[in-house]
Amino acid sequence: MRIVIGEGSCGIAAGAEKVRKALQNAGVTENVTIAGCIGMCWLEPIVDIYDDDSLTRLVRVSESDAPAIAAFVSGGDKSLVEKLIVTDEDSEFLSKQTRIALRNCGVINPEIIGEYIEKCGYAALKKCLTELTPEEVIDVIKTSGLAGRGGAGFPTWFKWNAARQSAGDEKYLICNADEGDPGAFMDRAVIESDPHNLIEGMLIGAYAIGAKHAVVYVRAEYPLAIKRLKNAIAQAAEMGIIGENIFGSGFSCDFTIKAGAGAFVCGEETALIESLEGHRGMPRLKPPFPAQSGFWRKPSNINNVETFANVAWIISNGGEAFAAMGTEGSKGTKVFAVTGKVKRSGLVEIPMGKTLRDVIFNIGGGMKTDKPFKAVQMGGPSGGCIPASLIDTVIDYKALGATGAIMGSGGMVVMDESTCMVGMAKFFLDFTAKESCGKCIHCRIGTKRMLEILERITKGEGKEGDVELLEELCYSIKDGALCGLGQTAPNPVLTTIKYFRDEYEAHIKDKKCPAGECGALISYHIIPEKCRGCTLCAKNCPVKAIDGAVRTPHVIDAGKCIKCGKCHTVCRFGAVVKE
Image 1 (cartoon, rainbow, N blue to C red):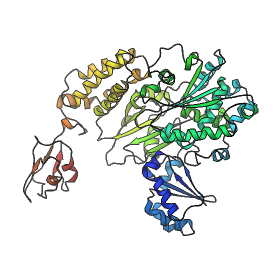
Image 2: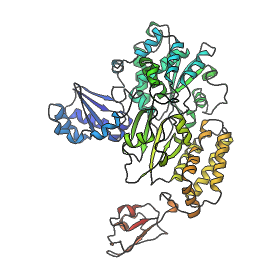
Image 3: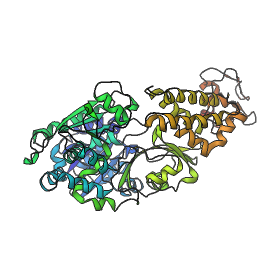
Image 4: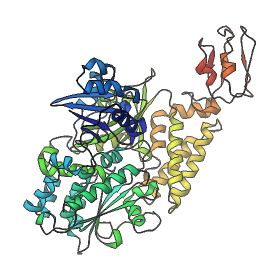
C-alpha cells in the first residue's frame, strides 16, 4: 500500500502538510510520499491510497480525519473513510481530460528522480542524443505541429530551426517561466509537480539548436517551484544527465535558474532577456530577433514551460501522434487554469478542438452559484471576454482570435451575472497600466488615460462619448505600442464594449450598474412591508447606518451607508433590497 499526499502550492495552502504530519502522528509512517498538484484544486487537500492496482482518492481531508485514515490503511473497511472518498461526478474532472504536459503531475514525487525515470523519464532525451540528429529532432517537432503555449502560438520548430541555423558556437536555450497572468498557474504546477519533464524537454531543445547553456527564468513568487527545480537539476547533474558528455553522446549542457524581477512585461521575450542580463526589463526593438541576437547578443531560443513539457512525449510517441489531436491549425493539447465562478476550479488539459462549453460545463461542472453563466475571460490582461452567446466557440488559435480574445498562456476566468463587465475591463487595465515598463508613450500614457475613463464610468461620472473615446484609444495603442503587452492591453476593453456595450451605456446614461457590483452606483433600502424588526441588519451594520426599534420596520440612512452589503446578506426575510 502506498499513500500519496498532494503537496503542490494549492494543496499546501489548503493544509496538506498538516494532514501529512497528522497521519504520521496517527501511526501512518510507512510508504507515505508526496506528489504535486493533480489539478483538482477545489478538492484539496487530497490523499491518494494505492493498493495494488486500486486507487482510493480522499478529498478535502483535514487533520481530524487522520485516525480514520490510519484505521483504514491498517486493514479497516472503506466505511471508515466513506465521507472522504471523491464522488464519481468529481472524478469525471480527470477522466474527461487528455493529459500530456500534465501526465505525471500529482502522480509522481517531484523530489525523487527515480520516480520520473520509472515513467520512462529521460528516455526521449537518450533517443535524441543516440539515434537522431538535431535536424531530425526539429523535423519531429515540425511534424507534431507543436506551437508555443505561451500565448503567441508561433510554430516551435520554426524558432528552433532559426536558432539552429544562426551562426555562432555559443547559443542559449531559455525557458520563460515568468507566468504573470492573473488567474494562471499552469507553469507553476508543472515545475512543482514534474520538474524533470521540463528539464528533459529543455535538454532536447538545447540539443536541437546547438546550445550548451540552458536558463530557466522563473517568477520569484514561486518559491516551491524554484526549490523543486533546483533539486531536480542537482539530481540530474549527479546522474550525468546534465553537464558534460551526456549519455556519452558528446553533447554537453549546463542549467541556470534566474528568479524573475517581478514585472509582467518580462514575459515578453526581449524584456526577459534584458532582465536576465541584469538590466531593467524593457522590450527591445525587433528585428533582430532572439534567434539571431538574444541573450548576451548570442543566438537564443525562448519557449514557455508548457511548450517544453510536451517535447519528451512527442519524441517518445512520434510527431504524428501529437498532430492527430486537435484541429487543422492547432495541434495537440492545451492546459488551462480554470478559475472564477465555476464549480470545479483547477487545471484542465484537453485536445484542441473542444469547445468552451466542454471545459466550463462538461469538465468544470458549470456555475457554482445559482446565477447563469455570463462570460469567460481568456488570455489574461492580453485577452478578452467571450460572452455566453459564444459558449460553443472551438478552442483553437484561429477561432478564439475571431472572438477578439486570445488563447494566451491558458488562464480562463469564468464569470456569472453578478460580474460587472465594465469593472472587469477596469481590473485588467489597472493591471496593465501598473505593469507597463514605460518605454513607449502609447502604452505608458494610453493605458493610464483609458483607466481614468473606466474609473469615471464605474463611479457614475461617465459622459456621452466616453465609449467612443475608449475605442479610439484602444486602436491607437494597438497600432503604436512597442511590444505585446501594449499591443494587447486594449483587448479586455474592446471585447467588453463589443459584447456588453449595453452595460457601458447603463453606467453612463442611467447611472446604474446592471450587475450591482459598482459601489458608487448601487444603493440599499428596506421594504417596510417585509421588515420584521428583528434588528439583525442594524446589529451587523459596521457604520450604524440602520435605525429602528424592535418589531418595527427599519430604515437605512443613505448618507451613512458605505454599501458593504452586510445588511442584505444577513436579512432572512428579503426585506433589504440592493438596487
